[in-house]
Length: 165
Image (cartoon, rainbow, N blue to C red):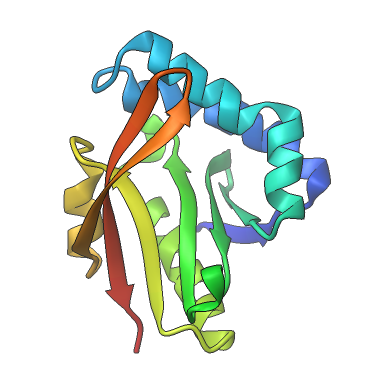
């Protein structure tokens, strides 16, 4: 059984450790190593993680009897428009296909509804196979964005949303 807990600043090293086990595995087949390394350092250095938490991102952890299986970060009422933005969701490769991602998204959806948010939103790389996973959970593509992340790199994403009921 998967237990979801809210992370605190003391959990940031654990989140970074989980990211080390998931981020490169997810993106190296899809993106150049230089870009993946750059993005990892940008988003997961300790100061950046602390800043994300300070600026309103909440992190949750998924754990079962064998240990931590994944994490997600989200922001309630992102941009003050009544939606919850999922900034990150990563599941260990050994736990993929076992419902952990769905449990993380459902936990965020419950928190969104509790805070009177009517939709979930996330960005996903346009060539990421996880798009099918999100569509199965009711997300729909609503936009395409190209985000300059510095160092000559761009993130080419779909914006996907799910209306909550």
